[in-house]
Length: 125
Image (cartoon, rainbow, N blue to C red; front, side, top):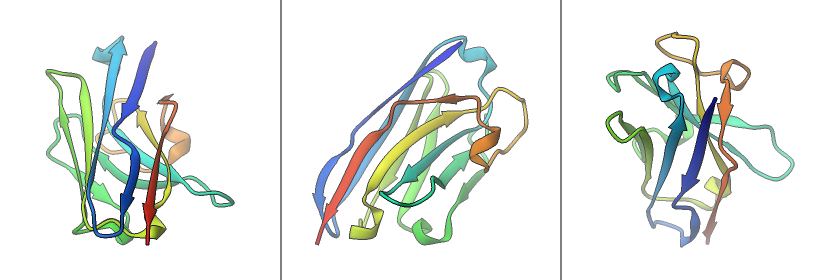
């Protein structure tokens, strides 16, 4: 099993920045691709960004391109999401996810095997 714990959420004004971190523990050698998802009230969970096991391949949803950056430090078993130029529409619970399938990239929530408990990000206007 793998446990994921997110941190770094909070309240920030529009235009501000936050850095989320997700620390993995347990059978971390199984972990391949990792991703950040978010879910706003009344909306479906959506992919924000994903990163391959090596960190060399990334994917972003269009609404966060050029504002958010996903990265990972495999030595620390941690994945990060740097969020800049935050907007009120970025307000959501952000979840970290990890895949054990070995696929290079995973972008759909259903394909991820492990999930964190979520961290709230609130952007005020």
